[in-house]
Length: 108
Image 1 (cartoon, rainbow, N blue to C red):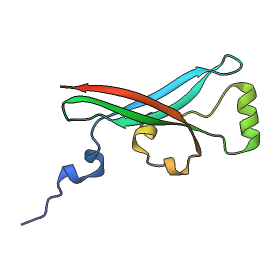
Image 2 (image 1 turned 60 degrees about the vertical axis):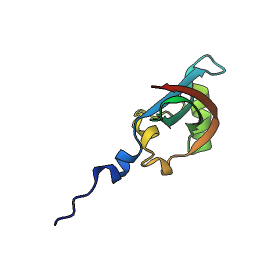
Image 3 (image 1 turned 180 degrees about the vertical axis):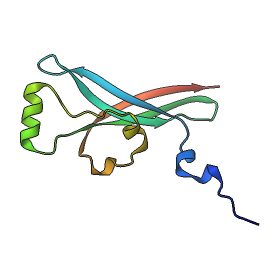
């Protein structure tokens, strides 16, 4: 018999649904800038669940870019939320830890 791969063994199907957070807030000059990104998998088991999400922000790669973005209020941002959820290609992106967010789920 031919071996048919089990779709549930594919990494894309193992994770399940996720909630992706993009948190924004004002900087020193009043510009609305990204304060952090994070993602968490939604639990499947009924009940109340609490998850702590580690937040991170992308950083400029050079001091000149950092200085320019600080003055202009245009900081690095992800344009596609899939970058936060999947993590593919994110290993080459410079990020800085930016605190935590706690989320509560009530699953029925």
